[in-house]
Image (cartoon, rainbow, N blue to C red; front, side, top):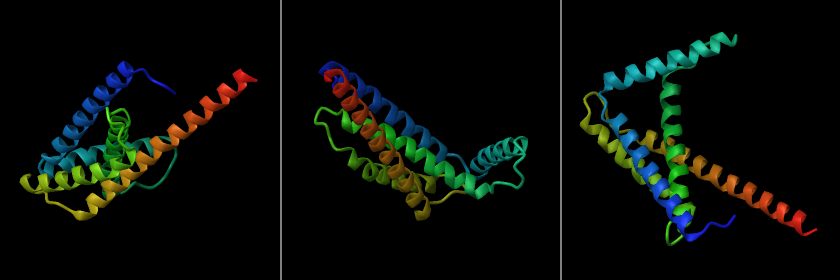
Length: 160
């Protein structure tokens, strides 16, 4: 799929803005105190478990699992935004840099938690965040491959 230079520029700036806003959201969560963070994740855990019970699924999703899944998900989403930003950048940088950029952001995020009461950095969270970033980047690559295959198939059908 080809985009004009103008459209590429618009997509780049939108993706960059989304990347920055999402990173600010992540950092704002890290500035919550330990009590505030625990309350937020407890509420989410309760909602998830309530929904599961509505569907007849017995048992409980552990609170700690929900917290770690949130780390993974936040950085998977960040990696999607960063990957699009890199792909549409003026230099058309490789999206394979996305997990490395997200690793740096995850490290900064954990350091930021040092300044929040009742919080502290955990290297295991950086690894979970980076795993999310790798999955988000892989998802974008897979989507790109699917779109490319569909586009080629459509072009071949038109030419036939």
